[in-house]
View 1: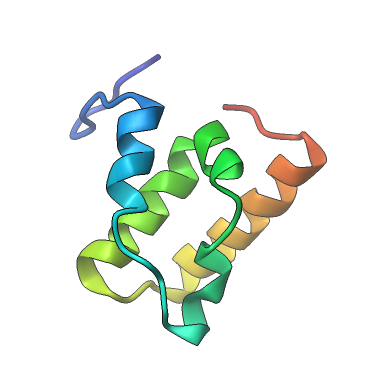
View 2: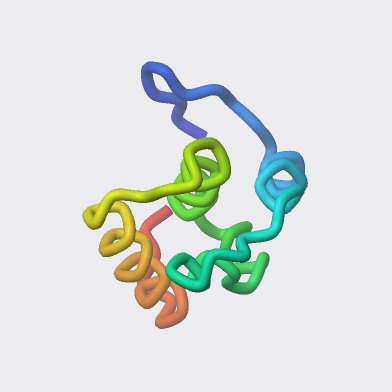
Length: 80
């Protein structure tokens, strides 16, 4: 795994425990309740959910990128 500046290494299982420690109850962000297996496949998706848990809000660009990445992963097009 390549670690970039300001990224901390964390195993997918530990990261999943961390990001699923809180429920996403806001209907606006219901798409964040995707299958945990999809999150296991993408660090990007995990980071977006973690951002939501931290701030309880996402930007429009984050929402769009999350949804696009989710579709790609479901189709098997992920490059991670």
